[in-house]
Length: 231
Image (cartoon, rainbow, N blue to C red; front, top):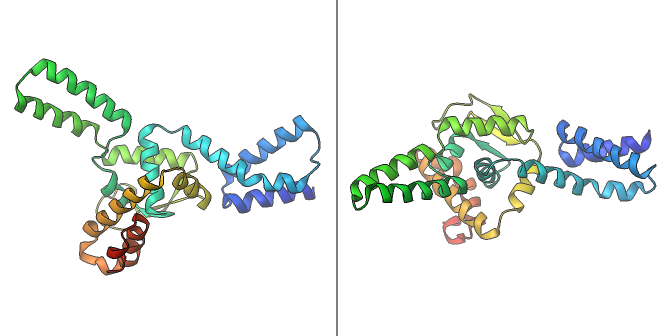
């Protein structure tokens, strides 16, 4: 009784109270107990809970497709909580690695088909890129899937609003999820992404910039541009 209560409390604290994680990890521990017998070292088991949670999160992330993982990375770079307006402003027109590979194959076909007609090739390439871009419908599907998997949750507002209204917000269901997603990225990649977030915020919130000075400065510092951050 007390042992299981201690385990449940530790999982609850480390997972931010995420019910999906609690159920999955308690089930995982239960299977281990059945396989290995009674719990002999409670302290060792409790120390291993953060690692179990991180492993569980990694498995969740690996189950996502390329586009979903790319968008999840941007969410983590923006922060624990993020607005739909800013997220859409950043990820729209971006394509995933698989999309790029597909585009390159299709461009090769176009080159063979149209030969030296550069204007026609350019027009067709633009058409291919526009179909591969992340639009609000595609982003919406990604958001719904991440909510369904217990990775993020809605904070408020209307999901499909794509303007400058900050009421439509989401957050990670637990800080540890954001940390795992954020820390798996290469430091240099994170720096570039923080710079892009800062630049996009300056454009998106031009009319109300003073409200976002601190947040923009934080992204600039994480991007390594200390001079601009303190300006």
